[in-house]
Image (cartoon, rainbow, N blue to C red):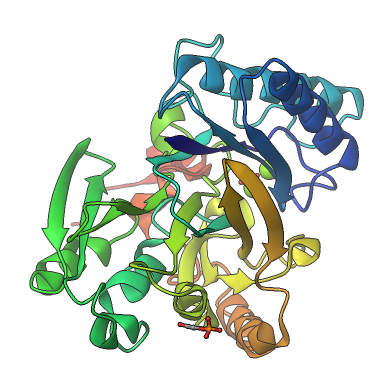
Length: 364
Ligand code: 13P
Ligand code: 13P
Ligand code: MG
Ligand code: MG
């Protein structure tokens, strides 16, 4: 068995929240190299999406392993030192806990992990987003694994015809529900259609029970009780064979659907699929970005990455995203560009409201 762990955090932005400094990535690689020499890891790949540092690791220690989580946490601390030396913006931004306590979940970083028996050809796509929230994967995961207009394999591939099982987390009430596609899609969409509260944590093949996808569902604002930056989630998807083909996995991103995030984490904007080198959100600190790193696993070794959105067939999606960005921006501080009031409670708005509290008078 091999475990793929993707653990990410924003440890400091360069410049502002737009990107990552090469020296931060270098330090992360040094930490990972050491773990490789110590035989803790089988392989690793360090990358970034916007200002978020991404540690992609393979090992044989299973999910939620203390040593792996500690390695990630210590790496983020080391990288924060570099960020502080360079006085990067928001150094240590996502490291909410004082000290490591066994598991990085609930401490700020985002986590997506899956333990798998590597197939003859193990195709993996890792999606990483910046300037958006956990829950952003709901629509694409629905399309990949439940929508035959996206994934023709659900119709014509015998090994996918039985459908997929969705594990959906209620991130506010800390509970979960599992629902089956296709027969329960109307129930599923009731929850998945509200991504600020319900996030798809995992998807399973109903015939083999194999894990098909897993995402990070950590909500920074709910952990911190205040706004500290967006979750900027990640999602691992297995592809080919009994899972959707690479093109079926990428297809949902041709529609730059609206997500929450963007400037000050307080707006709705289109999710723009880009090549890694273009994941530097600058316009109004956005619009939100998603990158896709493709790998073949070979004995746990990460063969790759291929930069999957680095393809002219996604130019149109980027163009539409820019048009939507223009249109949404013209709403300025008005909803639905600005998030609804309930969501604004997890931004910097409460302080302003508190200041004006005494100015309100009762209506006649
Ligand atoms: P190839 O014939 O290139 O392997 O493609 C098969 C396939 O299923 C593409 O979706
Ligand atoms: P990040 O969550 O990517 O740090 O962005 C924070 C922000 O406020 C951007 O305007
Ligand atoms: Mg940041
Ligand atoms: Mg970010």
